[in-house]
Length: 257
Ligand SMILES: NC(=O)c1ccc[n+]([C@@H]2O[C@H](COP(=O)([O-])OP(=O)(O)OC[C@H]3O[C@@H](n4cnc5c(N)ncnc54)[C@H](O)[C@@H]3O)[C@@H](O)[C@H]2O)c1
Image (cartoon, rainbow, N blue to C red; front, side, top):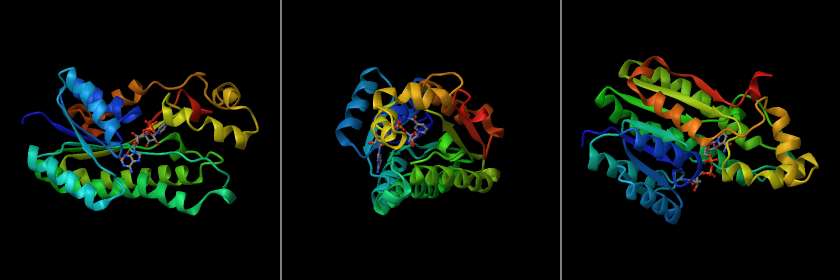
């Protein structure tokens, strides 16, 4: 296969699906991986019915042996993985003293340890080809704090550190690593946290956008997932070879204030 191969985690919906679609439309072969079998197969069917070069893989990124076997099978099939997008994530909002430790651990496993394991597995393949792009989906919560999101903030700050080390270790091998840091993107993950956020902010869930989020965002809007997807495709391109170890922020001005 001559097409470059992209492996996207958490690709069944939201930002991951948007990224997978954009890469497929740009001529890549895309592996949509997700823990949710039904959802990832549905998304695969929609993209493949449009004639795009895609495949699906059920993969819980927190299960190291499952990740190893999925990566091995993609490499056996195509001989390469050129682009890894570490996107799978979750949110849980609670004040520190009520935050379950098990949930904290789960979120670190999902959004920090899993990207480390995946990077470790694709690195030798990328080195062999003298080309690689690691794109980690962090967040503005990787740069600034947000009350009620202790685990999310910790994982998203952590992945920025991992991105910098990956960039340094990949530099001589044609491998770049960057983190995309979106602000509030209009996805189910964001809308699903309105209720819990409302509890920590003492307002009603249907007022979260107006009263909590928009006052923080100079552009007074949610980011569209196509904005994040286009950045990922750009970072994977040949012309972006000099951009490495960076955090690319897409937040409507949130962190500039
Ligand atoms: N939505 C936003 O505003 C926003 C902003 C900044 C960063 N992000 C980050 O972008 C990424 C995607 O967010 P989203 O809004 O599209 O979320 P989403 O909830 O819509 O999608 C997340 C996907 O990850 C999958 N997933 C969860 N656990 C998994 C596991 N163990 N193994 C494999 N897949 C798993 C889910 O099944 C789901 O398909 C996350 O890392 C999130 O932190 C989102």
